[in-house]
Amino acid sequence: MTQLNAPLPLDAEALYAQLVPAVKALMETSATPVVLAGITSGGAWVAERLQHDLALPGSAGVISSSMHRDDFAQRGLASSAQTVLPFDVNGAHVLLVDDVLYTGRTLRAVINELFDYGRPASVRLAVLVDRGGRELPIEANVCAARVEVPAGQSLELARDDAGRLSFVLETKET
Image 1 (cartoon, rainbow, N blue to C red):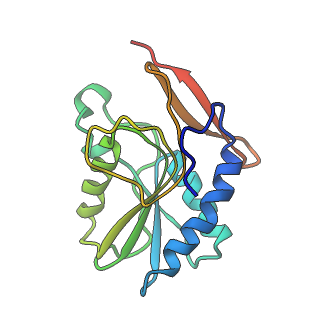
Image 2 (cartoon, rainbow, N blue to C red):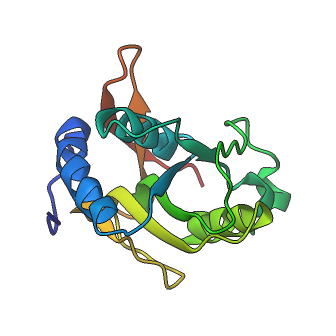
């Protein structure tokens, strides 16, 4: 399942196709139902498709890191979607879904946000891409690819009007 040092550019649709059976297998190992919560915005797109493609009841949640980021003073409130969790978090087995895992800081903020809504029984993580560079001890339970992205660049998930996913490699402004 996990590819080490996948070449750039990445085929987001192919990675998504690899992620689906891995998430299904992870969900089947749980004795109780698992609910999906996608991290805005790319993770929410992936969670929405997983919810549909795995024929899960209801809708996937959307969770934002905006209110708990450690750089909130510099960034302010993001214009992305805000948290909407259409399930009771208390006692739930939550699978967080994201597009790219990098430092782990977004995940830390998202976990804080999730606990504002209740106390889940468990929290796991599925990502399309792990680009390394962790600053916090966070690891994905399911990952379609591991890649090295040059310093000073970011890997962003994009979605077209038809819902097709693609990755864009962008140079960060300093």
